[in-house]
Image (cartoon, rainbow over all chains, first blue to last red; front, side, top):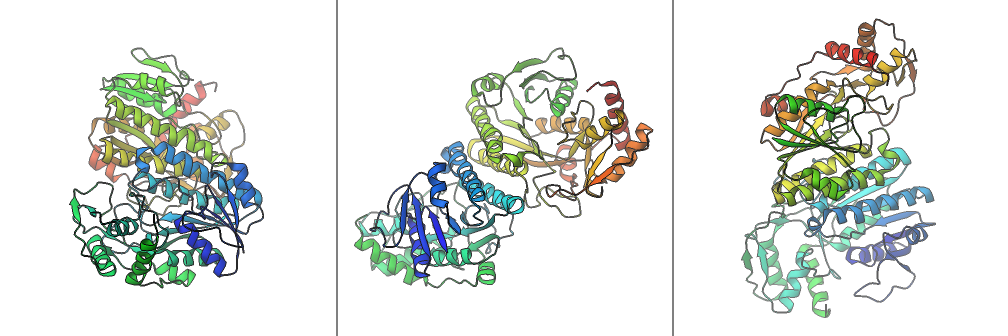
Amino acid sequence: MRAVVLGGNGFIGSHVVDALLANGHKVTVFDRAMERYRDPLPGVDYMLGDFADKMALAEALNGKDVVFHLVSTTFPGTANLDPKADVTSNLIGTLSMIETMTSLGIGRLVYLSSGGTVYGTAPSHPIPEDYPLNPINSYGIVKVAIEHYLEMFRVNHGLQPIAIRAANPFGPRQRHTGVQGVVATFMRKVRDGQPIEIWGDGCVVRDFLHVADLAALCVKAAQSDFCGAVNVGSGQGRSLLELIEALSDVSGQRIAPNFKPGRKIDVPYSVLDITRASKVLGWKPATGFRDGLRETWEWVQQSSA
Amino acid sequence: MRAVVLGGNGFIGSHVVDALLANGHKVTVFDRAMERYRDPLPGVDYMLGDFADKMALAEALNGKDVVFHLVSTTFPGTANLDPKADVTSNLIGTLSMIETMTSLGIGRLVYLSSGGTVYGTAPSHPIPEDYPLNPINSYGIVKVAIEHYLEMFRVNHGLQPIAIRAANPFGPRQRHTGVQGVVATFMRKVRDGQPIEIWGDGCVVRDFLHVADLAALCVKAAQSDFCGAVNVGSGQGRSLLELIEALSDVSGQRIAPNFKPGRKIDVPYSVLDITRASKVLGWKPATGFRDGLRETWEWVQQSSA
């Protein structure tokens, strides 16, 4: 396949690029900046540009078989601060991109959605894809609107979209932005001897997925002809307290978090049912939780960031 | 109540204004133009302006207790042609309006959503409000995104929104735009001796609601403290063939429609479960189908439009 990865120099994107190269595909990366933690990879065509720049985007898409859309200009925890900007940059930006795809005759689109926000306040069991979409923050609302438009463009314009509803990915090269990626944030704090803060009592349950497993699924998704939404997660929920315990183990340090009041925006429980990914894509998570944490911890220790 | 009706000079808006006046409320209308079919009503404060003009809108909202938001710059059948424009004018415009409401300290918002599009391809039974939202056209996608944002602003900013998911309203003063309002379109064609066209076999089932019943519900909604979504319909599904038969009866003319190929965008069956409106608002439709058609037919005959 000739693939273009929008956002291919970001955390998840860089792993998707690795997985594409490992499978012998031809890769173009379109991103605002070069990779933060690695040198450019041989054999990859890098194009720097803004997602809002329609002409630059068209140039990057031209001649490709599949588009991986991993661009998000906002984060789950902060998109609420300016919903209009969220809608403009992500929703309208994606509609522009889809128009470009259809005018260039490109059908296959792998879109990175969000398993942690599209369902909203979820029940206390793993969530299947046909569970009602009731997002409670702007990030999730925009993802849902985009998924609806993907389906509309499938029916009316022959787009072949697959929406990847990812759980909480972690792994090497994740930034510690403070608003996303609790594993990366916690690990840096442990490394730097800083206290770890937990909003709430630590019983919030998340689905921590190794980024290489997510990337492998994205490539399988592109190669399949399935259209629609697919959850991708670890298949298992873990509380923040369990994460802290595993981190203590992996780092060899005793971690005592500071507990702070819970936040309204945090969904209490968010674990994905990954049956469909197994059935329609033949995919299963391959990385054990502690193995993934260990690999990430090694990278965090070597990294200065 | 001091009420402002955004879009109050339109078809539905003009009936909401009537219902507000009949209940003794103080009414301001904000719209792009004056009413098409009536002279200005005594006691109503008319402000002409564009929904996108944030300052004009703030002036109209200032000092009000409740906002009725009935503005839509697009139609179900045509919004697909330019989804970006649909998102910009309706979704971003509504987010701006909500920001203005919160900054002015206005809590109560009655938002006109769309029972015919937010659920998408619906099952063959009346749809309750908790049915999953799977819109298949841009009009419905934007309505769903707005409903999600209403809930987000309720949780985070104290907005008190109620979303009215209306079935297919008909009645006096409905325009015959050709893309919305099949009753109005058909009646004009019968009056003018033109052939009636039906897309598909006429078995498409819709929920035809008299606009005065919808307007009565909107006023009850504003007076209640219920937040969330409420369906409003006639409580009964009728096929286009049944509509044609009733129209033949009411008009005294034998109507033989021309059948054309079905359209992808038409939901085959769309009837709303109106149990919640009865329970939480004490509302029921009061106008019989043929009575409503007869009243509308009389208006269409008198009108030159």
